[in-house]
Image 1 (spheres, rainbow, N blue to C red):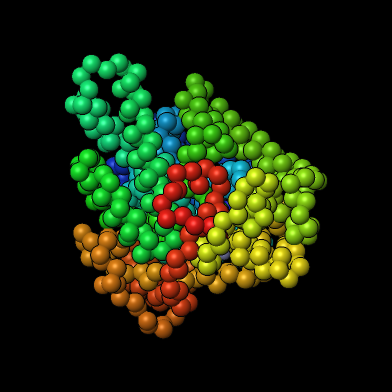
Image 2 (image 1 turned 90 degrees about the vertical axis):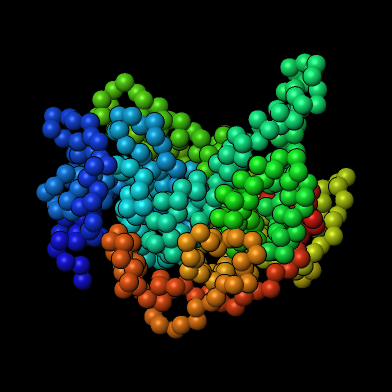
Amino acid sequence: MLTRHTLNVFEHEDPGIPLISRDIYNQRAAARRQELNGRSSIEAILEMTSGDDSDFNHWHATESGERNSRLSRLFLTYKPNRELIAHNHEVLIVDSTYKTNKFKMPLVNIIGVTPNNKNFFIGSAFIPSETVEDYKFVFGALAHLYESIEREYPNIGMEAPATILGDGDAQQIAAIETVFPDTQYRLCIWHINGNIQAKLLPKIKAEFDSKSSNSSAEERKEYIDETWKNFKNEWMGTLQANSPAIWDSNWMQFRGDYDNRFPSVMAYIQKSIVDKHTKRLVKCWTDRHYNWGIQATSRGEGQHGILKNELGSLGTSRGDIKDVVDKFRLLLRRTNSEIRASLSQESQKFVQRFEPSIFSKVIKKVSIYALDRVLGQYFLLKPPKGEEIGTLRPCSHLFRAAWGLPCVHEIKERIDTNKSLEPEDFHPHWFLDRRLDGHHSVPPCRQFENIQEPRIAVPKGRQPGALGKRKKQKEDLSTERNSSHHEVVAAAVSGDNSQLKGIHRAPKPRGRKRKATEDISSSQAPERRRGLRRKQGTSG
Ligand SMILES: [Zn+2]
């Protein structure tokens, strides 16, 4: 049991229940507050979002850990979104915004993804800085949110998120690994490529200038753009490896192509990205977990970009904090009703391209976005006129594992036996009304998601993804019970893991380890397929 002194995260609606624990004692300097009649801005926000008729739930932490001391951290979630969260809790995007100057502190948004690939706010946290402890508060509060939603929707099964996509911030990763040890952290490719681009462009410029002295500015620009585009496409293709062996060979080939030409950039990629993050980036690892194909936190266009821009403009708006909170509430209300409307519209809509009888039982039940992904798999067998049929490789199970959708092999089996796809072939995330189709069934390839690389304790300076280190990994085969979620969350906030048991102490692999196949999927959304020339085959 937690003692009285260790409590410092409170669920506002239910102040009688102690939630998670201590250690803000060391934290105080971080919060630089904007004074508002003696209140911090965070206290002002809390005041404006609480009350019996409030449409927010929140969790908060105080500076000293005592209830009566100053608020230092606040996690807000919009009550009408609870149903959306219950239905779409497997894949999350974490996105920090710094432009919310009104609040003088980072705002961390946890974003969810709907069946029709739209984004919505799961929770927003105001934290004084971005330390591991700050992020443990954010994800600890998220864990509590999940527990409270599970009590409301006991049939849904609110497990920890399967994948959280983020910008690779080390503190953020450390906090997530503590609070949600089984969750796959996936690195945002947009951030990674931005970092590479910043390092590479000056080198390309230098290369051009050393070769051609009297070229026009346009020629120079064209050369730079073209070289970057090729580099990026090849790099992205390298990451699409369906097995560790293919990754090794892709990476060696990529290095062979560019090591001599851009040595410092290649050394940077090796040291800062590959050595540290292979398993958070390369398909054969990331796609063992549901991720709905999401690769970037900041998609330049699309829903998430819109949310982010509107939120950014909230923070820089001229109004006072009340104005900002009111606008935030309007944004939440609007996105919530837009999403509901779009889902119900889809359930009415007949879409010509899903005419093949194999789709007959799932149209209007499953989102068009998901059906299009499956149609892409179907086209591998029965391509549209004018396109050639490819060679079908053995199933890697990665498409099923990452998307929760039937792959080309499952579709082939149905066609061969004259059957159509059933709603149970689709992960319930994709249902337009998740409750309608009731229980969560286990689709054919689903057991694959449980097969994970063993987690290993990594000595300082050695990262789990480091090339050539794989063979040294040891599996923990102990059979002791696992810590409960409460214990994990409590430890997350206290930073004391010594009491944790089972997978939370030194997680052991779940399920048997599957041998990597030579199969390569080309089943992604069109934007993922571009530039993936390397060792590609046709399959799913
Ligand atoms: Zn397959």
